[in-house]
Amino acid sequence: QVQLVESGGGVVQAGDSLRLSCRASARTASEYVVNWFRQAPGKERELVAAISLDGRNAYYPDSVKGRFTISRDNAKNMVHLQMTSLKPEDTAVYYCAAGSPTVKVVNAAEYTYWGQGTQVTVSS
Image 1 (cartoon, rainbow, N blue to C red):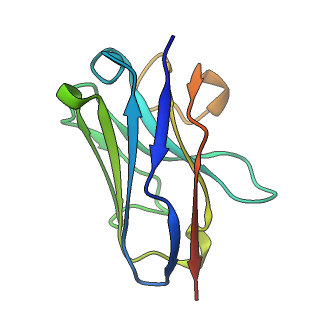
Image 2 (image 1 turned 180 degrees about the horizontal axis):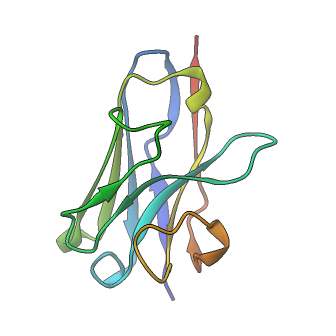
């Protein structure tokens, strides 16, 4: 059973930074693609960062490119999301997800495992 637990969310002001962490169950981070999604009220779940198993390649949508950085520490089964220059439109519940067939999968339905989510609120 793959378990994912997010942490690091909170309430910040526009322009601030925040670092989210996803702790995966044993060996998950080294055997599964673990990516970050977010979901704002009334909107679909959106992929915000994807990373290859070896951590060398990452993908970001235009909405967060240059501001968000995903990284992974396979030895510690952790995947992080560093968010800078946060904007009010970044407000959402952020989830880490695993189990997609390849790295850059934007369709949330193709992920098998999800964390419980962590709320990020950015005030203007």
